[in-house]
Length: 315
Length: 315
Image: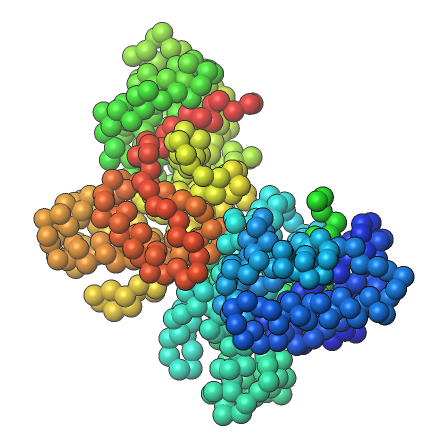
């Protein structure tokens, strides 16, 4: 899970631009992050919490954590009274309606987050998609991002933010939802043929390593440590994930032909991920131009910054 | 190959809008089509010819056929002196530079079609991509095409025209070049894992049927006839092609989430193709919204009409 110190470090020097004092929240598959931005758009403080298990499809536990974030900021920073909030969530999100339609990983269905949170927080609340918001932050705030670019976030799930001709596309919330796209990957256990999330999401990498090695690990970063330590099973599991990501990148390249593909999520700090995906993509492209591959400049904080940017949009 | 009568039938009642008297040419993998449009944008006449084999990478044989089209129209229609030309070609096309960068099926590389044709025809010539032009014609001239739509043309090769938020995207000529995208399809001969063009293009359908049945056929429409006649090998080959197309449609749906997918090319007249692709796509989508599937309203003439539309663009 992203530490508070990491958020403060990445956000240093960034500005959303002027606007209301804002609470921004990024609801991830395993962790939640919150930021308090001042009226100049600078980060004042950050908080993190584990994502609670949603025992029902209503996501009320998640909304309780958001209310706690708000109370903590209010108590700690009386000089910055929060005037607006923005929340980004995974899954299929109806931005116009303010509804979380579906999250495969968190289990909710048709939750009217915007109206429920507006009422409980007594604030105007904006709702968007975690990965599209992360992409927006990267596209707008990281220099030299081309007009045709894609950001793929590898977390508990896998999804992409897609920029075409300088515009982030949504298609009613369904654009870039590549997590269940079928890929075929040769593995140590034979041909894997299934959703990319089942071989290359952070949670799948941890699970596949645990199953194959008989050693339980807490998350994909432990598998990465094992890769660095030369563990052959970790290397194999990681290589299979990377090959699957290369396959999805090739599919995306054939459809929208981005100049750059940005990799985000906790694993994107690893050179092995970037180099591996680049090689896997190159081997799968025929006459297409090879996109450049880079890691998210805003690291795991991109979604949170993207949530902040929402509060700078016209009402 | 599309017959002249078919072009005249589909184009009846259509108008490009006012503009110069124009020669439009669609260079296909097996056949070439030409149209003469009058200053009101109405079709005056049409011609077809087999696509000549390009013995070198310079495509000079193709350009000779275009010159013949022009001469024939000039001789037959003295009242409509041609003032401008537009040519659409397959492969990777640099529209801004007027160059055919690469055609896998016709063999040319880096041919400056626009400048060569401008000189030989002594006309202003516009150059574009066959499938994107076909898509443009469908998107602009067929009623009720949504702002998020994709047209997949199944011909000698397979490519897609992609409309996002009402705009046709190009990405330097590489957008929609899905022909070499990997798909996995269960076939009578085991798992097929390879480029979609190798299992579902019109030429591959004919080749796979010929190989498996031992009966040589001239083209995919012969295989379709055999499907109608109940030939089990033809049905199997056709079903495998359709399943591969469903896989590519699922990939496209995950990336840009179109409301509608339009199928074009000679086979798109077959209900078996539309129904089969719809079922294959539906079986591969998880939580995505199912796009509607329809056939190209302009049939095999869409690319030619799209070429005509180019002559209505501002210079």
